[in-house]
Length: 131
Image (cartoon, rainbow, N blue to C red; front, side, top):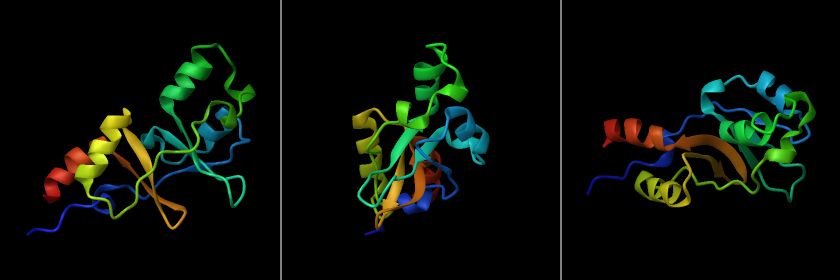
């Protein structure tokens, strides 16, 4: 039996983590990996959880409501706790989870730390090349 393709085989490891107290404008300006379409929001303390802000959140909660990017903090629009997967998950189960929850991407967390981001696009295009 062939070994399954895992999330770690298709995830990308370059991502941005922002502080929840950052303004949306500062967070966007500080992003190095703009193709991710997702801001990962750091934990505020050891017992906290990671959060996420999608481009869609910025569009619907800030721009569509005519709010100024420099007057809205990330914590006001983030989704927390972030739905996440681990790097050793089979991509078939990851794809099922993401589609069941209506998500297109999520952080990959191992041992309490973000190690990457996986998306349905990565699973479909990169997973097919490996299989």
